[in-house]
Image 1: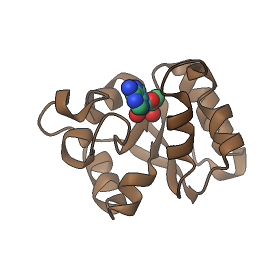
Image 2: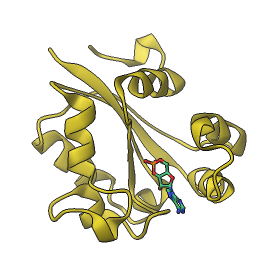
Image 3: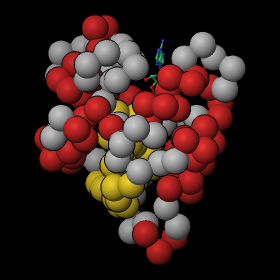
Length: 139
Ligand code: CMP
């Protein structure tokens, strides 16, 4: 039935009351939500989630932001899920994001860019397991 990707609606978009709008765009684009929850990451867990970015100039800022409030985490299923979802969310910097993409519509700036999407099948698997156990996933 296809492949999976992981997504997280970031604290800025949760604060701006965009959860419903963003999930609606995702479903209308043909993604099936197979796991979903709202939670608040500790700084320690945020550092683990973004471990691959450790050492980058924006790492501390990123960890502080992502642990600043609740996020909405989801696993999405679709054919070609990882690539199609990255296309749907648009460029990291909303200034460069194409018209109709989630970041173009709902993001403030590069750091507060509304939503995360896995960058590979391996990342999707790791990120999905980081947030959900098998009882919480509806394949
Ligand atoms: P995301 O796809 O969730 O994964 C890494 C995040 O780092 C990325 O989204 C951006 O929001 C963030 N990021 C990338 N570059 C910068 C930057 N220059 N300043 C702040 N945050 C950044």
